[in-house]
Length: 77
Image (cartoon, rainbow, N blue to C red; front, side):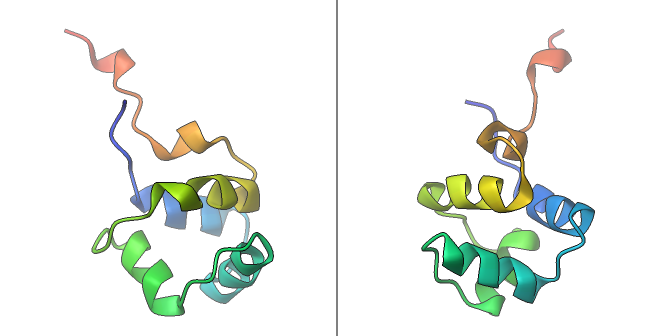
């Protein structure tokens, strides 16, 4: 599996014009209850994102789960 890139959470959030609070509210609607501190840590890559949260994040941002992972296939020698 390609490495997860938590920094893309902020990229996708900002691309949708969402604040962190907006994102938290939308995640709660998907059954994911997190604090603002948790989202901030994910975006700064200081805390791991539970894999079970990825489908909800993808839905909120309108992307596929795979979008959170680096595409390493283009970097073959």
